[in-house]
Length: 590
Image (cartoon, rainbow, N blue to C red; front, side):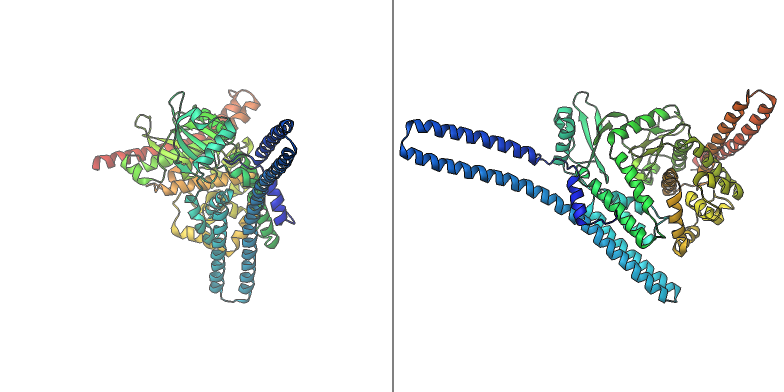
């Protein structure tokens, strides 16, 4: 991205395919008008020639005048078409320069603000004064950046939403300032959706749907969802459509994101966030391919169909194209809608446990697909009194970002978590190196990042609830220099680990928002069960390589592996039995 400038942005933007507007593509119209103009000219010239057979000298004069008018009209029409085309191209280039200008100018102002603030802080002896000064700088720069993200829209909204959830990495002033972006998603006009549907399918909306709601029931940074009815079957469906303008600006916006982080690295090399833009460049094309999302949804549905005890519902895919996805309409309430849960007799602890089982299955299950964006907007809860084991369903939406965890990494990750649960630091360090290649110096920071806990807690009992003091200690540590180390650490770990970290952070947030009575104890026991199962399966596989499991030596090994697995299983079963008794007693008393 070196040498990036406005001219490059304009040229790059012009090379990006633009979504056809309702007016049609101008080049086709130009050809059409030129063709029509040519035919009209031929007809007029033919008429003039025929008139000449009946005319005289005055007819020649009239013919000359008519020919002049035709030439002027034709030239005027051609100029008009060219002007429209030129104006459209100039408009696009102008908007590209405008988008680029907002990013570059705000970036320059923020870099200068930080440099001035940091230089002044070096001359200030009072630590509290330095902290106040730096926090004020964080806030100013966050406010400026928010305005740019909102103005540019498109994938900048998604970037801001992602940054708002990175409270383990970014200063509080940045993450809290970006929170409003969660509710400020663009809404594309019905007319633009109509035009895109016709462009992508060759049909009108009315050809396929007998009803199509003009207003979306939900909008996100990349797409919006409309309710509709399939004309042929009468089935109610949810139609996910990509914002038409994304195709116009996605390439430029990704280039600007990359330019921003590479420039920040140039001025502040200790804060290398280029891995973030690299991940966006890798992930975004997949998230923009709704046909791929449809395949992911089908795969997830098929995988969990073999585990009926998990209350997961993935809506059926009717059909999908790159920018359009038609799915079964399955609705519910957000998992943090505590009023809905309580009013319908849905136990928050059971919802928490179900979410823990579903996402641990995705991480540790053999050949399981991992959903990498499980935030509150992509999950819904609905009441289902007919389901065995619980009275609700967990509905999972937005299957655009999936990953597969390699089996060796999955097994090492399971051993790492078992070491964390057992507070075994030596084993933690060993498997942290296998999982992410971190050294002993980086280990405490990595352990805190992957668990969301203060390192001092990890050496005692990770299952205890996070106190407000612990959260404060983590934020203070980030402000005292650990942030720089964390940025560098995240830049070197494998990409799949970053996505696992993101999934962990989002599911942890979901669990905390449920405000369960038991805290995280049960979810950690569920995690331990899946980890133990993964390790047990590996041990059995290794024993099979030696020969029959019935050989005395292998039989002893199998018994030891089974006892290790059962130890965790018994703990969880005992805890869940105690919860059931407690709930029953509360029902009797209540």
